[in-house]
Every structure is written in structure tokens, then in C-alpha cells.
Image (cartoon, rainbow, N blue to C red; front, side):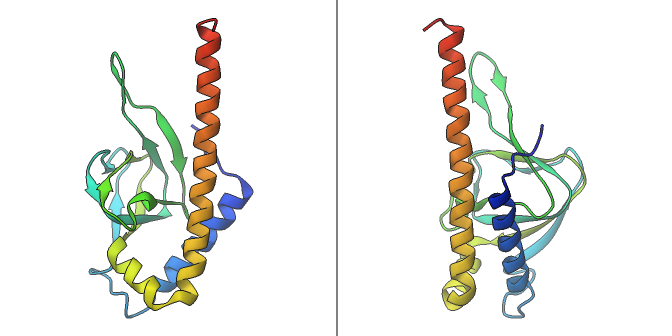
Length: 166
């Protein structure tokens, strides 16, 4: 499965990653409380669809696959996308705890930074000079991902209509 990156998405993720590293290097944003470094082996599940969570993940090294479960005649787990070093995931649960919308599995050995959403939100409120650019880039990234999802839905709808001669 190929990664679906557009140039602006790469720039946005690089900017988000750079800003997150600045925050992590701030002594006020304590390791073990506000963030943790985590390692996963290839094939190991990182997040499970439907579980509650409020963390954002930054991939320090390695590659992961984002998957959802389709409940049709048989359960199918298609890959939504592959994410690589510098990419983020978990952003949908950053500011409110909701069931995870997808599962994430390590394709290779992976090193991640798991950042607590509540503590990050508090930090960003206290440091708007860092918070605004992160939120702006995060918003742009989410819009880009939503646009890709919309294009996939349009393609699948067209394919379904054609397959059924509609």
C-alpha cells in the first residue's frame, strides 16, 4: 500500500512534528507525564478501533498501517493508509475522548512519541505562539485527509454504480 502524501501534507506534518519536538524539549512538558516514548515491533497493534483514547502519536521511526473494520458479509480490514517517520496519527481524539476511528498496526519496528491530549491542550493554551501554528497546521492536515477520504468515497460510489449498471 502506497502512502498518499501531497506536498502540502508533507510540509504540514513536518511543521507539526518540529513544533511537537520543541514542546517535548521544554522541561515544563514532562516525559512520563505529558508524553512517553514507545516502541512496537512489526505486526504489533498500536491502537484498536473503538477503544477510548486521547493521545496524539508522532512517528519517530518506522512505518504503520491505519485500518478500519468493514462489517459486511465477512469482516474485512482494508488499509486506509500507511504512515511513515514524521507522520502523526490520533489527532481526531486530541481534544476530546472518543472511540478510536481506526486501528493502527506497526508494519516495521516503530518508535513513537505518545503525547497526552489533555496536557498538550493545556500547554498550547499557555503558549499560543506555539499553539496557533500547530493547530493551524493540524487543521490543514485534517482537511487534506478529509478531502482524500471524500475522493475515495466518490470513486467507490462510482465503481459501485458502474458494477451494478446503475
